[in-house]
Length: 80
Image (cartoon, rainbow, N blue to C red; front, side, top):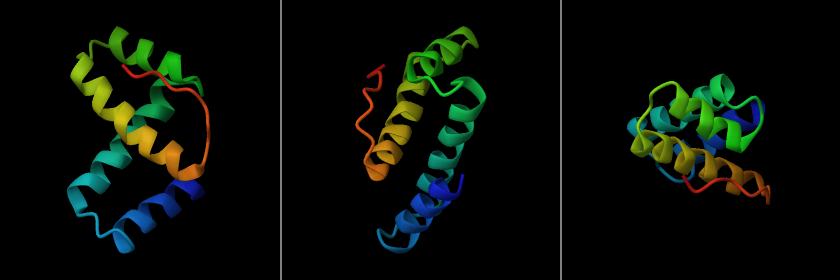
């Protein structure tokens, strides 16, 4: 969680991201913790099984991809 907090601080103060996208990042990270079990594929499967539409899943995947890119992780993540 500390790394995610660093990511949020950088987005807010160095990139000037407004509160709405910061909330979007936080919601996506909460969804990651709730649905993924640490597995990107399980993240998508669990969200879809919970009845989430593909567009919502894609939105949270985009937010998490921004975080993963920031961390420098090269893990292959689902595109959908």
